[in-house]
Structure formats: C-alpha cells, structure tokens
Image 1: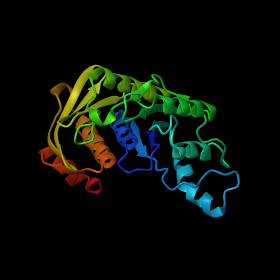
Image 2 (image 1 turned 90 degrees about the vertical axis):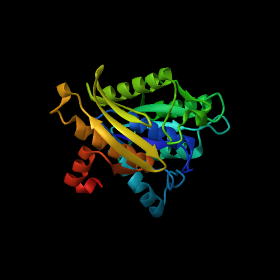
Image 3 (image 1 turned 120 degrees about the vertical axis):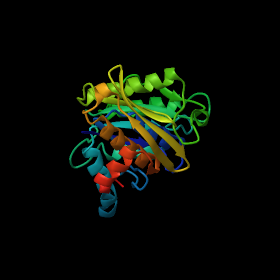
Image 4 (image 1 turned 45 degrees about the vertical axis):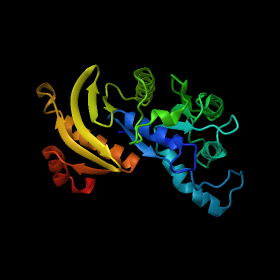
Length: 267
C-alpha cells in the first residue's frame, strides 16, 4: 500500500487547512493510505542546525522519506503561504540523505474564508514545490473560497458535484502517479460511505455522524460483488477516516461488530 502524507500549512488545531487536508485524506482510494504529517514543532530552517534542532527534525524527516506522495494544503497570509509550510519544505529539501521531496507527486490545494480561495498562496506553494522537485498533480487549480460554508457540522466537505469531481480527478491522478491502477474509490457523506470500482458501485455503508461518534448502521454488498473482501475494505477505510477526524466508532450492525470481535487491535 502506498502512503500519502497530509500536510496542512497551519499550526492551529482547528484550522481550515487541516479540515481540507482531512477531507482529501478521506477521498484517497483503497491502495493509498493517508498519513498525517505534523509540522508543528519543527525548528526554523538553518544550514547549521544544532544537535537538538536536528533531533526535533528527525521524526519529520523519517516520515517524509517513507512517503510516496503528498497532499499539501495552504491557507493564505498576506498573499503568501504561511512560514511554517515554507519552513517544512525547506527542511526536507536539504538533508544528509539529500532532497526528500525530489520526484514525489503532490496535490496542492488552498483555502480561505474569503472568495479568492488562497490563490496567491497556492501559486507560491507551487513555485517552491517545483523548485524542490515535487511533481505537481493536475488539476492544480484547487482553490476553496468561503470554505466555512463548504463544511457540514461533521467537518466533511459538502461542496457541489463539480468541485467534488475536480478533487476526485486530482486524487485519481495522484494514485496513477504512485503506480496504483484501478483502485477501489470511496465517496463519503454524513449518511453513507459508497464504494466504487470504475463506474460500478460495489458496496455501501450506512452511517450517522454526531459529535465525535461515527455509528456504522449497515454494510451492504451487492451479491455480484461479494467474496472480494469489499466489506472489510469498507471497515478499514472507516477506521482510517475516523482516525483522521478524531471520531470514535460505534459498530451497530452485525458485520461491524463481527469485524471488531475478530480484529481487537482495530478498536
């Protein structure tokens, strides 16, 4: 399974950039595992980092080296990306192991409370991304203005179908860029997780999301799609999504209860 790093250019725990990054993670197909990358505690970049500063960078650099691609989400401050994101890009570009970004694909998206969607910050991130050797995934015009109005109370994106299709296209291109072909795709709403392979729906999971609780009410796999492990993949993806959004899972349906009984560590 390929690992995709989610990096939000904000130090605020409830920032819009973090919320969009989580939503991008929820859109990743079955063969891509979203991994949250924290940049909160990185020291300021210097060509002569102290031993203590190097140790502070150690976990971050190890994580970046082990990832296959990225989703970078930036807010906009004074028509630029925040310094914390630029700092992270700089730190991983000049290490003892070389440039850790080089050749890896990245989705770049921006977010703002106003109507422009952080377009200036996005342009800035793209310039630096290309400079450090990241492969910017197309479409790259992923600008989310008035973002608070695009979020459901659960934190899930409730954009129009055109916007969701654009995001799904970017995610599909990212999957192709890391060598994943014909994956199982996921479409998540507050009420349902839909599993799709190609153009065919191969399963659904009925849900409710209230507060920090995700209740799995039913998992339904059409007869023609049974015996392929699709129900298990639905459960695994719901576990990943719950971790991204800090939700606890309530397994109400029989299959979800069986899954947890047989995979105790998943709880």
